[in-house]
Length: 289
Image 1 (cartoon, rainbow, N blue to C red):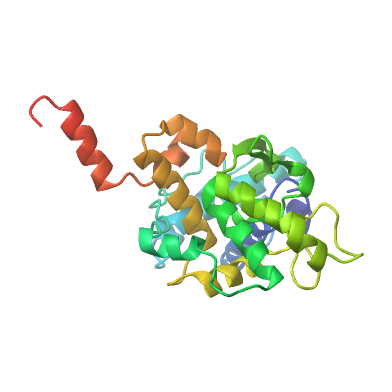
Image 2 (tube, rainbow, N blue to C red):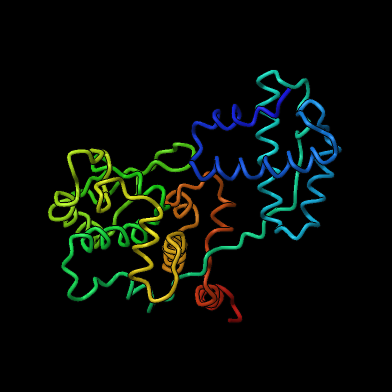
């Protein structure tokens, strides 16, 4: 019996390309480790072997987050094998690893955010119209970069200032749009997209690049590299969005819905509550403050 890795990865129809690639790397690492011990097929893997492997991962200098992700990949992989009838028992049931540290992108500083959102002076290239809409949506609606790149014109309701997002696991949610993002997207649809889009451009792509192809996460990184005062990852804008909502007094469960998190604990790990907000809560709530 082979490891059947490709069949497993093809079964992940609801996972993003990045998730599938991460599972492939994690499983490759486990297979290589197991084969050094003459274990060459999933039927020969037992719970003790998996626990030994996670102990090895934990002492090899990798982060706890990586160990937790590899445990998750193994659980999903062996669970799939068991459901497919390839193995009699699932050795990964209840398998656990140290929880990740929950390290998060740093909140973009106010001055850097203002520069990022300010249209470059004298830049009348049509791509500048697109870039403005991109950064306004990333910060104004807290989108993942993959969600932004997957948007289509039909996902927008500009009069109602909202859009439909397809998130992880093909889960759909409605997200409000900020007024600046509505203006920026309207300008892109009116003046920018008709210029860059070609006859071969996908009709369901809101944003396209200079070649008329759907905008990719790499394209978005280049946009931020051109406009940001310091290196800024697209996910940092999502984190900043959530942080500013909490700083403004938003309820944690409301932020959870806006971000598309299935579990509130994910939002608690993801969002950063500033020292200023904690101080304000203490001063307004504690009788001796």
